[in-house]
Length: 106
Image 1 (tube, rainbow, N blue to C red):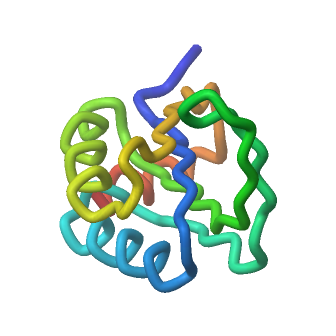
Image 2 (cartoon, rainbow, N blue to C red; image 1 turned 180 degrees about the horizontal axis):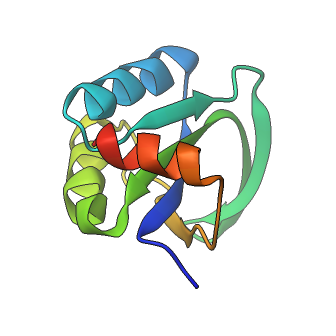
């Protein structure tokens, strides 16, 4: 049975930007927790008709379906990219204690 919880993926241009966004969304209770991949990931993508590459920092954001729109607005407001990645994945199941903590943190 699916849950109300979501894992959101966002990539950032710098570690400083990743930390800024993470802190803001946790402080505003839009996310219970954000994991920041501090070692850069290499992204290869098509942008404005050309294949590009960049070193980025990946955020793994834990939230609920109810908070997705507000979370997306805040990420867009703080993000330096014209079109930042914002992908939401349904969390199908998890430890009941962790999911209770997640719910109480939002």
